[in-house]
Image 1 (tube, helix red, strand yellow):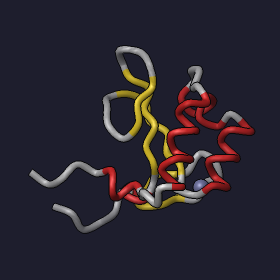
Image 2 (cartoon, protein in one colour):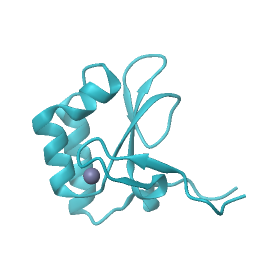
Image 3 (cartoon, rainbow, N blue to C red):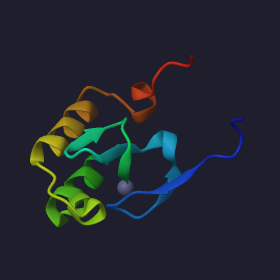
Image 4 (spheres, rainbow, N blue to C red):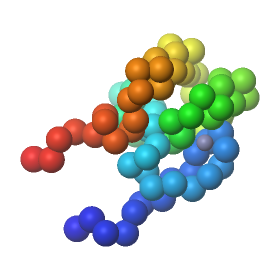
Length: 95
Ligand SMILES: [Zn+2]
């Protein structure tokens, strides 16, 4: 287990990164949007202001997920950035 990183593309800058280092935004199968955890179509975003702003301005999450995404999601990511939280900090602890 472990080893090779799983690469995902940021919806804003299009860079491919290890998914551990990206925020994950999920369109839940049961409806609604979640961060970090959940089952459904996912979009990924770098933990950078420039990528969050690009996603907001160009509606990149909406396009990737093909559903409405409220600004509250982007605001939450901005708040995490300001708090110095990285995607790795949001991972669940190992069992
Ligand atoms: Zn990016």
